[in-house]
Image (cartoon, rainbow, N blue to C red; front, side, top):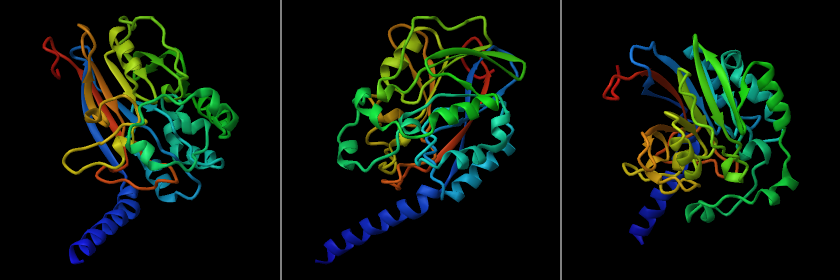
Length: 305
């Protein structure tokens, strides 16, 4: 019986670690992305995703407020800000001075719909299908309209199925965005990336391959997404088991490349996010995170200038 007791004890210790410590071990990641013209001054982009805020998460709120001290040039928010019907005031307070910086955003499913208790086995055994949007409309119960108005009132730009130009530190950035692909709300077009801009960037909540493939084929050098939670429950030294979409687990978080056909590769950054569903408040080998991306110039070989 002793090996069984040891196994049970180790499992209990792991659950306590993931539910009590790691889920609150907020971490700032940093990465350098060589996507600007040679000789360009760097741009600092703060990528936020999957905050899943509830009103009582005061530690998370305080940590988020502190990110304004980084003084990024741009904030990109890839959705799932809310996890409670009363979470909008805490979200706005936590973002604080970041809302006064240039910013863009898209929404995820948990900006529209309150989280609900689900069988975790469904997630661990696949999770690659798109949710049927028609079945969700009855439950659209979170204050996403109010959040959109609040973000836009402070100057952030909604990219839900839209193109938009944003001036950042004297540079013109050409964005394309989609509404949440996980819900099937994305509307992809055939408009090529604007090569006259200083940089063209694609922004989505969920990194489904149909979106990544389209934007790579259209010439977007940089794509930002969230949704995966980095796998949330990962195997140490191996990584994610699943991504909750059709992206391969090896790219569940961090900076990678995406290429389809003979097109030039796009840089893809997937945020592991800062939160979880209130019904699954655990993370293992996958700390909650925000990422500060430093965009730099490239030389003729595609290396940092």
